[in-house]
Image (cartoon, rainbow, N blue to C red; front, top):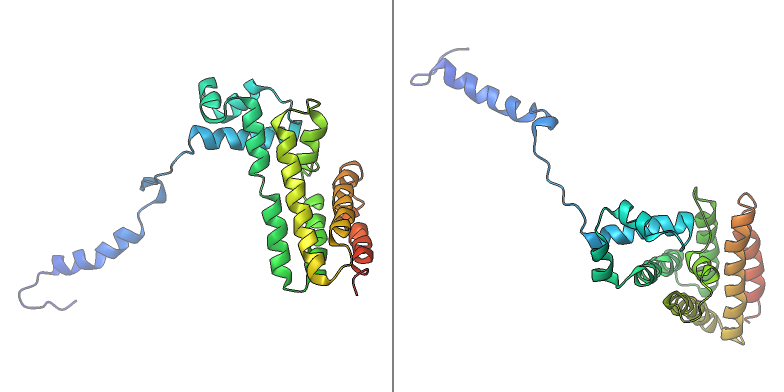
Length: 217
């Protein structure tokens, strides 16, 4: 390299080497900061996973161990296991998933309703599928005053309203009754998929849902 007046060769070398040093810094030598979720989020994550895999009667100790939190955190954030399980149901995100499937399908109410069954097919065919979280909780807890029942009913009411609104837009003669029929099909898909996971019941239910939709002019 030819020299430049006033600038030593070593200065050129430093300038050339500097970007190489920056790009070649090993990842293991860089500091990566991660924020661990707080006790509330860890409790929800643990309960969400364990109650789906083992049912709502999974022990409190197992949830606390998975979440790596003290028992006082459970009572501080949820008032106890019942409150935690109820919050898990409330935050399941299933209804939002159905709404997204409808929205992705466009504006035609007939297509939007059938899109839910397409989504059900994906849900029930996924590895680790264990049924409807809300229905399972209701069946497992006999006490009618338990808060999971109110939460599960609220979920079903919201889902019924979702279907009834689309049937009303479609011009169905009895949107509420039509929504009753579709909700029965949805529940049937979940139950059937648990006992016969390879049957893909959402596809059969989709065809039956088309019969309900055909009542509209």
